[in-house]
Length: 78
Image (cartoon, rainbow, N blue to C red; front, side, top):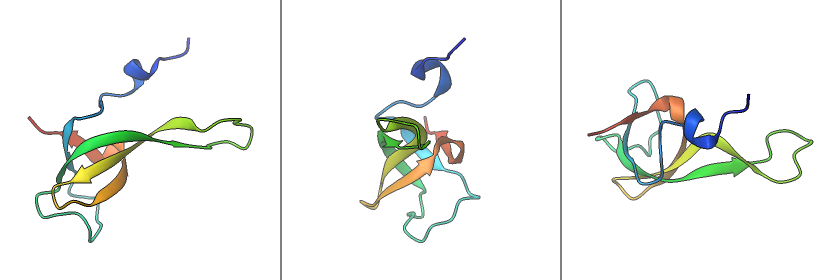
């Protein structure tokens, strides 16, 4: 049985997230927080005709930078 997008991802566009402490990039602000802008699409396999959605999200950080992170490095902020 194939999972739908809603079943496979616990995140959605607009969520406020924090980047986990084990992820390092000099462009991450000290707060490590940002909003999810969109899921990144890519040609994952050579047989893909069109780009497919991945588990990578574009995050608009609080310092104005837009960075891409796999959802395993994200946590929800309440």
